[in-house]
Image (cartoon, rainbow, N blue to C red; front, side, top):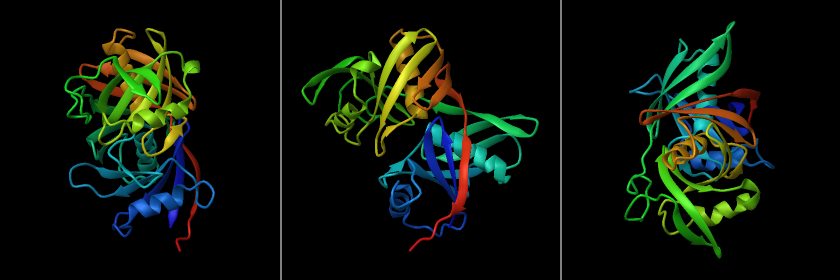
Length: 273
């Protein structure tokens, strides 16, 4: 099986073509490929398939074999891959995801893709959308988890995200696993610890649902900016520093734009037993 490994701000993915849909057990395949000792190693796989409603379809499977409807860093890598392979001609690509069709714009200079901007679509604080068992919006809500009190804000940004504001030094990333599986979230939640530096800069570290600690999370960075803006901490245009690099996020009306890098690490063949 041919594959390409890519990374976006340290969030790494294995991309495989499956236009003929010959891989019918993607969960098992992802677990095998993403194993960092016995496989290639990655946070997840991105599967390229045909689409009836967009230029191309992206299927996301996390390292543990669970399905993800959307991934911000993943879709940037996916878009650059599609552009480099010339599967879609032009610098604007419509990509079908589990969270609807997303528009990717490739920033091209001298024939080279320098970065990718994604329209991440709309966000929602409605607990039914997240989903959450809470009766109302979760805005700065006190939550007791593993004998510690957290003040959380939750929303849907393609996938469920919960944000804890404070100094990053005050939290261990592993604390995210307790919030991820809290009974308040029947389908679990991604967890972001967010430090507001000023109106235009935040720092984020993320515990991803189904992947654990990662160097970056695109949807999580977007969710943090939306939540920070909702609470009055930031403006609509914010730079997000994550362990793996920098993302630029902008809220435009009720939609979110995300700009950041995507790089190919290597290509190869994987022999499936």
